[in-house]
Image (cartoon, rainbow, N blue to C red; front, side):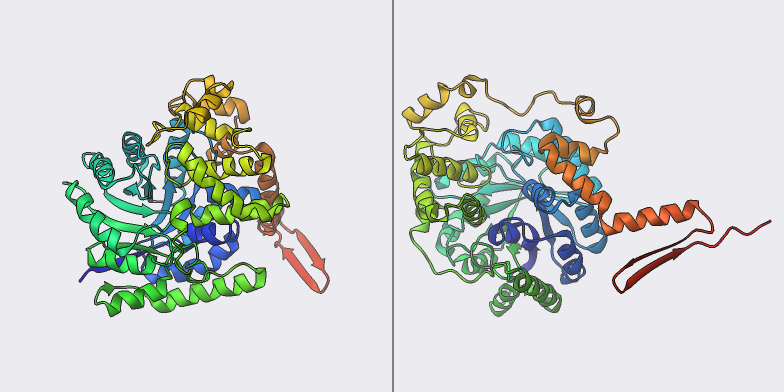
Length: 488
């Protein structure tokens, strides 16, 4: 039997899959982090660039402070970050110099584990990102092979891609990522041995599979039977549904099958109970086991993208278009040459499908991101592209520009000249990849938060011996006094 360790994805992928990436705040992380640290997880997936962005955009919270808070409250548990290595917050190709700054800041602020998974299986790019990550201080770098269904994603295709990772000494291990929940126990049994046989130095010993089709709990048990030692799971209410198998039930199932899992299930239940209370208070959805749906294998849209699409259509006042957009995404993916339906390509496909449905004509309006994809910014597409779509894209002004390979020369000096010489590296990076007004709102909220006000009062008292001040609101009064300095 296998000695299994668990990777918790509640804060990042559970939140993104079921709560549109906006449900969890820093205060919630502070509340449950001590219990998460007691569980004994192999790692906690804390963020992706999407979560950093939503922290700023929707909560006006400094994401770097959130990372530092999590590190302080989870000192025993490695904190992890997910990247494609192609984009950071933005939905266009991000220069690698900005990636190096981002990786440096992640390490500086307490993240030690990195998953690098290129959805287009550009393994040369993944190796380059892994080497960069090791260079700036990540201690555990895991490269991904990304599973999907399509006419071009065959066993031979996957075996060839995973073999390209083996010689890269910056990569510590390989994981199998199933963002749409398409794997079945039977498929895993046929796929994993071939992938393992393509590796000589590395091991494929970790799996990430969404519960979207209801099969992931069984697929993870099969993975343990096959000797995979690291399984991804989430805590209810951010488990099941389009998220991941529920951690407490997974532990019970693994132990019933004879596998070893050394975790504190009481701590898991306490953190889960807190999240359930938050879900009730904020009227947030609760993940539930999904019935198997064969039609899902046609569109393969990941759960997080579905929940975000649903939210965005509601914001547009067109929630009734959801089913039509999902169906149109099947045609868009085929026309694009079968890119894997994972961030950022899942968003590209869904955005273009939404434009097609709203305008009533396929490709009457092309999104910039789809033009970039067809232009070659993310490397060759795995299958044949529809010629009409390609012609439309290359006829646009954007489509005639040369492909971006991420190697543009962007220096810190350039960024400081543009955004301000005295900014911290953390704020500088955010301003380089986000709208300025959103970062301005975050900075203003940081200055005006109760903690910031209290710190300001304490600094004032420190400079002024004999100071006495009182602040009251209703029946609450706060008094701050500093004794006069003793005379000599």
